[in-house]
Image (cartoon, rainbow, N blue to C red):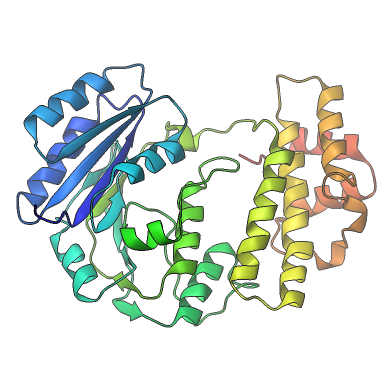
Length: 353
């Protein structure tokens, strides 16, 4: 049986009106030039996604169709990983498109024995014909110290990396990953808060990679839809608990990056703790299903010793924060919670999401 070289995993939720066009476009650009598979993962869609997918499996022999209960995009991508037979893996989103074939990119992966290839990418707004390109330089990197610097730069360029490391995007649809690396390290998509699964997956793979490359050419086009779920502002339930779990993960990542302990401590104290305080504060301010009493209770929990302990924050050392958030943090530090709340609601209107 011929070795499948690439698995393209596509998570679907209410994607019935999009997915046929994306799949047809993938097939159009790739024809039968190399052995690849498309894995469609239906994440409990209530629309006609299932019917469309079953029709596509009849039309194309290289499509696998997976159905699961609704669990979000990260769980759908993970389900796709469990069914992937390709030597390399990539991803696509149901409402995007491809503008070139994958063949030259998979050939580069195999020829150079890459763990990960990050390609340049394109984006286009839904009602605009103009296509923009994010271009990376052609580069092969087999220095694991530099690869970890790239991972650190995705987290924070000032504290966890330096200017010698190139910046890459956080998306998974413009990257190809060696499946063996993913399996060897049991890497899976994780979500602590909302929509950060791409970012987490790339960081963990970069930490495990021995050899990666960047490409000035690309194949993927992100279609920007302003009304999509990722563009909507909303209140995040249980943000304090979710952010604390995220902090456990990021602390482990910082250790794996080999960051000097004093530098890591400074990053957590001067960047992450103040940022967490303002995330939780701004989030609670806009919980419009709660009473003001409930909002103030949520804020107080975040500011207290069981949360982020605002008493330990030194305002003079706070980094990477907008002027309005710094002012609100100063007011909160002085225990004027209601004043900070009304200032934000009436003047600044800062939100977390």
